[in-house]
Length: 150
Image 1: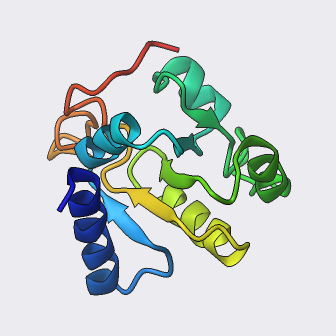
Image 2: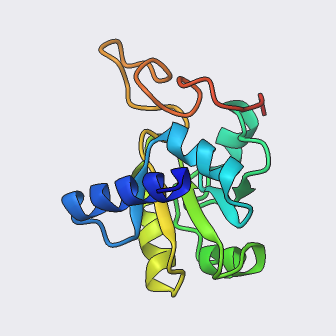
């Protein structure tokens, strides 16, 4: 079995186990590896502009807010912006701060007819540690994957 098939199979098994309404759930390292292996894979960062600017960006990620800042209003143009940015043939991996907004975005994209939607577990910053800080227990940055300061 090829490495990308192995990763996708694991992600799909996680989704079935968690009863998720989209194709699969990936670790940050798996998502990064798929970006290297699959030319049609796209990482869609659904954090806010403030997060991209102040926390950091993933190089070459497609940036489409799921919620707007400030106010946390849902972006009513999310699916339209997604349609302009990617093909339905693309394997889409959604990422946010910790995995919640990206799960909602993957759900919406799947319902809109995108067949290969995956959520990136842990997100960009991971969960909070015992002191309430992020970037210490998982996440894209914690795993040393490519990112730049916004």
